[in-house]
Image 1 (tube, helix red, strand yellow):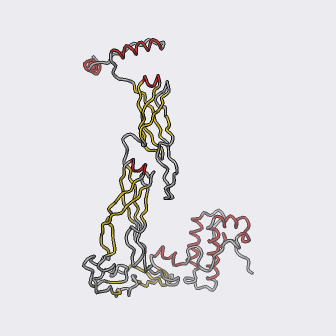
Image 2 (spheres, one colour; image 1 turned 30 degrees about the vertical axis):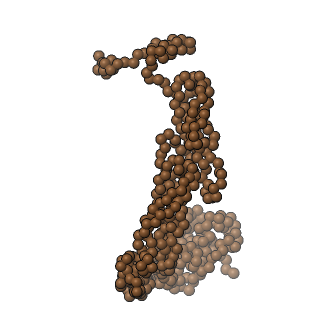
Image 3 (cartoon, helix red, strand yellow; image 1 turned 90 degrees about the horizontal axis):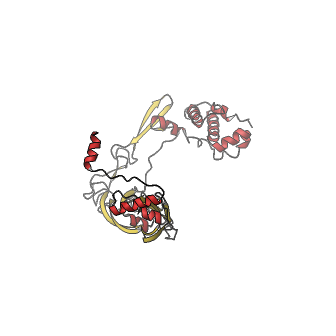
Amino acid sequence: MATKRDYYEVLGVSRSASKEELKKAYRRLARQYHPDVNKSTDADERFKEINEAYETLADDNMRARYDRFGHAGVENGAGGFSGFEGGFGSVADIFEEFFGGAFSGGGTRRRRRGPRRGADLRYDLKISFEEAVFGVEKDIEVTRPAVCPACNGSGAEPGTNPKSCPTCNGSGEVRRVQQSILGSFVNVTTCPTCQGTGEVIETPCQTCHGRKQVQETRTLKVKIPAGVDNDTQIRLTNEGAPGIDGGPPGNLFVVIRVQEHKIYDRRGDDIWIDLEINVAQAALGDEVKVPTIDGEETLSIPPGTESGKVFRLKGKGVPHLDRSGRGADVGRGDQHVLIHVAVPKKLSDEQRDLFEKLAKTLGKEVIPQREKGIFSQLKDALGL
């Protein structure tokens, strides 16, 4: 058995070559030695050798084994190599990338015909904050394409049938042969007469005007699970656009849009709320009522509480979204209460007197500042 050449030598690259360099080398050599282009007696073997080298070095794991153990490390690892199936598959793939057509020697690529799945559709659904938290069932009206009931999707008036396109003979493609220094090329384009369908409709359906589909409006029920958030998608199977040539319909994706709440701020599955207390409550402590999505809860404020203090109400947040669809109890987030101590901007005479007395007991006699009237503010502004 002949000794295999070094794969790096085969591709003409260094052992430190990047993947992009490997790909460029492979493409250049594949074009040069493909048997449909190169008529040398050894072209077939050279092309197989090039494919085998590229298939091995383009795979990170295979390349590491080859670098360490040589050919012995990949003899059973390159698997799947057979003729022209490695790398780009065939030279048709390479030439299609440059010339936009299929190479005559490597086999032409025909347009895929037959049943095709319908397109997926999207519906944006706005719900309230509470509906997102607890879940809800909604009725939505969706206008979407549907198979024309008059012609059953043929596009032709009942009693008539579409005919095979005379331009492309039903293939949906027009093929033109071009000559180049590398041989004959077949440039494949969509048939301009039938637009690739392979058929022409001489008597269009009066209901759908030959489009094979009509618009219909349907009312669908959407079950929204507890815990959804903005951009959560709910899939309604087979409620999308109808399939083509008898293919299955697509799906309808309902995308959730949650309205902002006046007091609640959602962060993941936790809820945050701002709570304002006065200086007396902050200094002495208090018991206050805090709103939650389940109703009011009593929160104990300890003496000496400062602004920025956060209290947690465990399990009063948003239910964790159950993606299994079984409706199991998967727990909830928490509610966080952020404290803001409000300092009064205006005091009555009695309140001012009490604060002055309080200041003395705290070891610092203050010099009360009176709020300036509008004329004093104006004088300050004018520098008078």
